[in-house]
Length: 407
Ligand SMILES: Cc1cc2nc3c(=O)[nH]c(=O)nc-3n(C[C@H](O)[C@H](O)[C@H](O)COP(=O)(O)OP(=O)(O)OC[C@H]3O[C@@H](n4cnc5c(N)ncnc54)[C@H](O)[C@@H]3O)c2cc1C
Image (cartoon, rainbow, N blue to C red; front, side):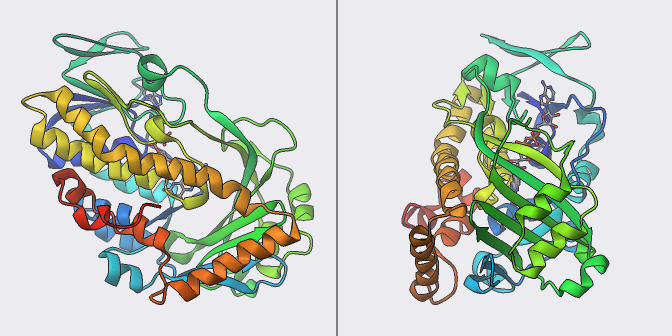
């Protein structure tokens, strides 16, 4: 069985490593001439880190990641904690893997460094895909084609595979923009920022910030309603002065980070509606191509990592007899969880940007109740997210996780 993977982002690259580990025959077609990522941070929860550990990345991650002590949800003006949920070392103890913060470029470099170069075709843009009784075909912009038995679209939110095979259409603009920046930790020393994952919800503006790159940099993201149309691309620079004005009245640390940032970038946030089918015959989608979601639960890439493991193992265990049936099994194992997260991430948007004083008080009271209801510190949502074991899911032995209350 030969597998064609379209796209080598975090999802496709993880799939390639999982297919290599499974001893399967595959090729990865990536349009970019080199594997790179934008200079932003990414949060990797234990459910994803566990898979990366299995793929041999544990030492790399330990070197460039930062392990935060807790998630701290804070009042935007006073900086007072509304909720703190422990992460280090509790996440390791309870879920068998740490919660990490990473620089995206470090993560993609670690994945790329482990890819089998003989299986990776860079500068290989796929312009058409198809299938017939004998197999699948990917046609390349540069001419020529690849033939195989199974084709996986890991080609991101604008996925050609999704659009051609499943559901033509564009990503849905959320009506919100995300600004981001990176500040050298030395330059921010006076702000005395602890090694936590900070989430701050202000009126119509939220912010997240944390250390990356072994603690040398601090990454921040701010999200607020879009006053104008912007593209979904991190290469657009933003007016830093305007953003600094929006942080007027905020407590010193997030405000100070924005003030210290030389280059502020902005992108419009998009997601996709849940896709009814992820599989058509011998063709399937995964990662953002299957379930692009808003970033409020920091799960987009991590869900792609989970997909990659389950898909590779399902093809390994069942693919030789009937590849299409193996893909259907992958879809059945993965769709419910990823689509719940698409929906939860959409719901979170409103919660993160409330402006009305009564609604804010109600939200914050709910956050405070989390702490009282969960004496070991983890919320029900965190347990549902972090306890997921992709290997047990692939084997169908994840009864403990399935018994958790659905979230
Ligand atoms: C502000 C923000 C913050 C986020 N924070 C987090 C977080 O903390 N944690 C988390 O888990 N997720 C987070 N995410 C989500 C995460 O970034 C994405 O879910 C993830 O990067 C998607 O990976 P992917 O491999 O599926 O797609 P992509 O990264 O888009 O990769 C797709 C690849 O396919 C290639 N490709 C596309 N079309 C073709 C073609 N026709 N032929 C060949 N190659 C092609 C592309 O070049 C690319 O390399 C965040 C997102 C945003 C916007």
